[in-house]
Length: 334
Image 1 (tube, rainbow, N blue to C red):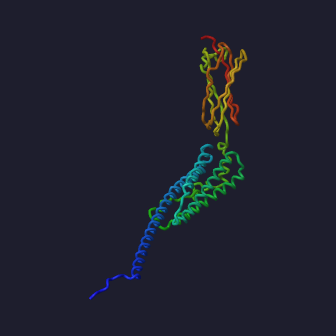
Image 2: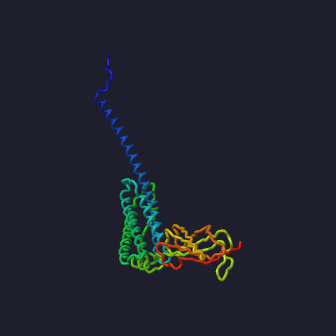
Image 3: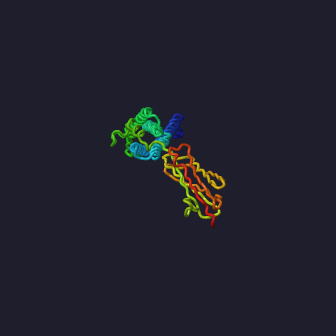
């Protein structure tokens, strides 16, 4: 008895290939989903790591702002200016970190954190500008309104940040939401209830004499060789071929002076011969000193001389200490 060999029909073959294709597609889709999920998860963790770094900087800026407000009337002008500048610098640095791509899972918290950060940067920038203007004798009335608006902006940032923390109720794989600090640029319960009061802050700055800009430089001089005695009440300088004059310039103001000019005049009283020389000092900070030396000044033994040092800045509140002078006789004996 003869049997036909078995041959799958076309319909059976098509079903088998269709099953293989569907299985392949399902496998590929599963791989794509897993890769996409892993990428999304990694992106989420990376975002929250950046957010963690940014919020740490904002927390530091908030503490420094409170410290700066408390230091008004206590700390020197330049230190206070530096404190407010530091707050703005920290807030901007934190905000710059948030310029990143955000996965869809983090869209809501990112939006809230970015809103808070932007409001904080705007607020501290305005606070710094208002304080600097006040310390430069700006109008107090305008400052109160501007400072109130800046403080309100900071409070808006605090509110947005609170919403950001509230959006983290669901657990985040690979990251602990509890690591985010509580941040309030405007402390709701400060030790001093008037610490963030715009009117009080403006009055404190305006009433502080030390916070107003003061420009004052003075000069003292020294001869080399130094006088060793006198003749008729006039200092007598030992014999030498030349003489040097050193001027010590002190900035007793509270503003840095970009350029200080030091002029020397030395006159031979017997012949009326005049020598003039000039040197400059750059960036002389408030409370600091620097010196300039005029070397190898020709003098005639036995002659009477008048030396005068004069310091000049763009605006000097106390010009009475801008000049140092001395009369001396150059000894004719070697």
